[in-house]
Image (cartoon, rainbow, N blue to C red; front, side):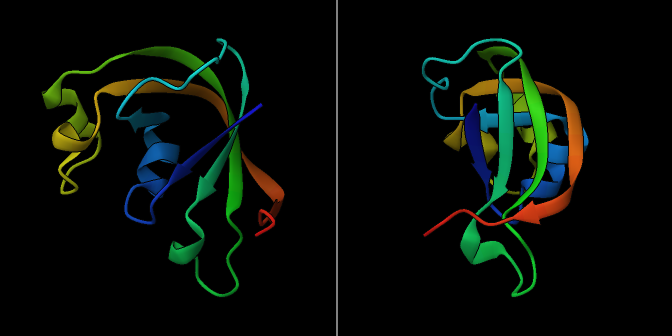
Length: 101
């Protein structure tokens, strides 16, 4: 199981597009691995939990600047990230939860 964190600006896009981006590829991950999708704590509303969705990991590959900007506009995605992870089997949790501090 792995944890992918996203900012409040990109969290909904990660869920909707089933894509997450990183500066470098996630280390030691396997295809079909279970993923907790977390929103950064500081971006959560006072009644909102960090872990609201889960998914499974699909393809991990280098991304083009164009696709990064298309998937994550207005956050300088091409300057920040270079690896794209495709997710599948995303599910909203019935009981979202927070990570311990």
